[in-house]
Length: 257
Image 1 (cartoon, rainbow, N blue to C red):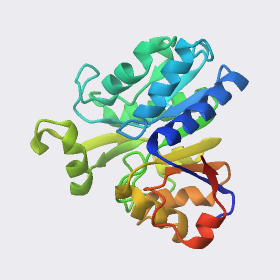
Image 2 (image 1 turned 135 degrees about the horizontal axis):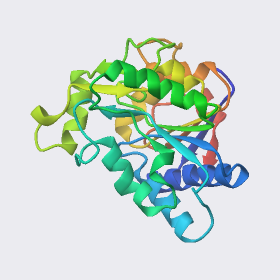
Image 3 (image 1 turned 120 degrees about the vertical axis):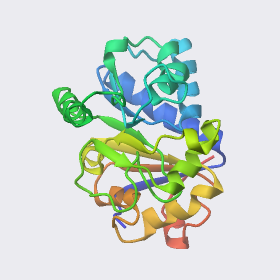
């Protein structure tokens, strides 16, 4: 494993969320026009709640920043309650001072999805790339919707979701049949070009994926493992997510009280 990876272990999920939110707040204060990469799912909800609180307290402003989301389901429009655009609006954007034109989410209902994927890549480049990217991790080690077997140089594209991911995401839908079978996702190559990356994981169900990402050889069987090949990577974990890490890894972590 690359020794440039910083690992922080928090006492619980709330503390982990607070730590990540503080990192985002510091970055915003240092560079108000920052380009943020954002994630969806259960893990970052606490981070967004913290950021909304910091904004409401007058400590941060999002007026000058730009955001790019990692992914979106194919076939779900922005008004669908399970779309990631809808998730971002209800969990963050509707509660802060950011203009709609400064928030970008992949288009899952484009008539030409391949063209919109290329446009998304160009848009990220036009803003100078992503300064700070937030990631979660799937139980199978996926990052964004890059499943095991994904190319480490991949760009924004359409992917088929695995049965594992469809099953994991079915809790957000009325039934498993309603879960889309495809998504648009930033590629691993796109993600790795971010200037700084924070991966957050909470819960014992993520412990094996975290151990494989941090302690195995980088390879496409664990897409998150590619993160260890570059600089400026921070893993923020709660104790449950860190529970499968070995002694040598634990010894060089930074505990968060």
